[in-house]
Image 1: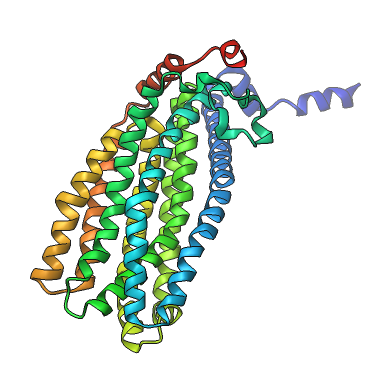
Image 2 (image 1 turned 180 degrees about the vertical axis):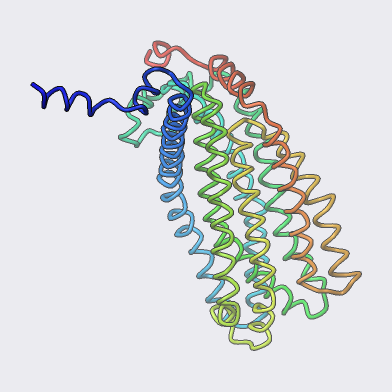
Length: 383
């Protein structure tokens, strides 16, 4: 009995008494414990968000890289035929991009808003053909129906600004290749600008995947009425984009003296490409930031605002600066790409300002209204 009493007495301490009795020390320890639990919970939420975005971005990056490799390898082969052949192939690919690819990609990006927010709001039947062959989204396919044309004006209101937003950006890069043909020694300049554009487009596929991932995450969370989740998605992807930009930029600088050999046997071309690579590393860093911020814009349905931002950044700042550097200050092809960097800087600054000033709660309400305004009853689709 005495031993049992001693054991009971040993379980009592001033610390436990303070916690149970609500003393000052107990209150401090309780707050520290709660803070630790909250920190662990926040860390877990961030890790889950990173996993979700990598799960979405990984396949997109792989598919985009493999698809673009068709053009990349073609230009590499043509480049070894000579500067003239490389210049001609560059003009051809630029023309194809300007007249078709950019427009289709831009209009398709309207689905980032509509499909993402519909999925987040659990209006699965609204996704239709977009996920017909996805076994993980079986609820989304309800068969072919004339209701697919319901409220098509809402889609066009997003699709047209989306196309303008993408085209304005892509066309400005292609214009650098066209303007290089007006410089002294146009064959050399066009060849090097073409290699630079191909290199920049290749490494851009990584932030492009992240951009689509954050667009999906933001639209899903807004459609589900979770503004905090959308804000977290943007914060996470920005950190990932900065990390990716630094790593890829370091790789570009490390391979600068050998990368040109993949495209040309001309010593002059290889040396010029080596001089361009540090500039490409900077532009890739800025391009990664603007890509993920543009993804957030698409997720929120701000395509019209994004189009105005791109118009001002590239055509009021970027291209005039490129012409100034290349033709007035005689910096050549490097000057053209420096103009692009100026445009990217303005674009990132504008999109970052919009993102920081965004009222996420209000955007969640808008997303809910947008989804329910365009929602078709399941019975109507099935019929």
